[in-house]
Amino acid sequence: MTFFKNMFGDLHQLERARDKLFLIKQGKKNIRTFIVEFNKLLLLSSSSLDKDTKIIMFRRSLDIKLQDKLISTKYTKLDNLTSATIDIADQLYRVKLNSREVEEKSSVSKPTKPKHSLSSPPTLSDPKDN
Image 1 (cartoon, rainbow, N blue to C red):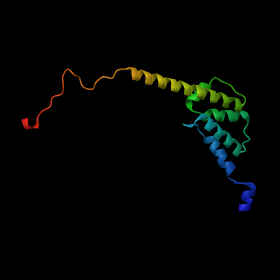
Image 2 (cartoon, rainbow, N blue to C red):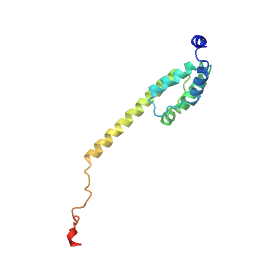
Image 3 (cartoon, one colour):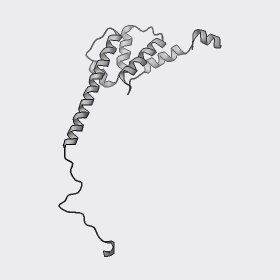
């Protein structure tokens, strides 16, 4: 049996890769990592899917923000779509970083209000008075 596996590989690998390909989602993964994983599953599944189906599957598996940005685009090659997706993901990342910097600068420049008002200091009672 080992000889057979070595000669022909895991017989269920193709089926598992195909199943994963249909279920894959980007989630919190970096776009480049996700694209590598998606392409690996395409290769492992020996997928005979046509190019349009591969493009649809890739789009469907992306983070919703990327899907929204790509909604009005039309690509006929998966390679072109993945390159454009990387560019858009990089733009979204830069916007996120810039907004964090702006938030940090604005929070540093804002004076913080004291928790207690100085007009009426808290009174302390002596436990002996009770």
